Image (cartoon, rainbow, N blue to C red; front, side):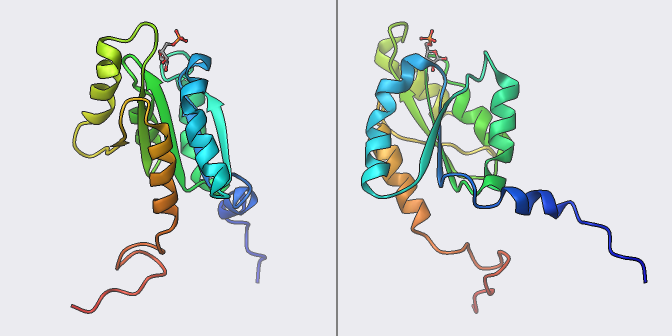
Length: 166
Ligand code: RP5
């Protein structure tokens, strides 16, 4: 009998578990300070995280690559903070099945103190959900991520979980 050819899953296994539980993306270096409370909160809870500066409009390919491979690296929740038109959380959600928490941020160029980013993030069209915390609410994003991580292995019918008896 011929030896079985390696499955593409080998690639997945290679990545599995090497990434942090939470991936934080920001659209600009200028967003870093506003996301600091999220990093502190995750540290205090002992949750591993990484932060990357990846802009939806300046580096769309980078965002696509990061978001579409995050789950393979073992990341379970994505947090995306951005200001102004704030496309980043929505783009991330379009490339990943992981839950995405958007953080609308204020910047020196914001309209109405960040209302522009808030509406951009919260008004995602049906089918591509993004959770949205308050303007500059990065600490809440981290707490919500922790709550998501604390949940069990899915809902009835998902692989590895028995179907609920009705
Ligand atoms: C967004 O535009 C960023 O998320 C940032 O909040 C805002 C301004 O970016 P910079 O011009 O400071 O790089 O893309």
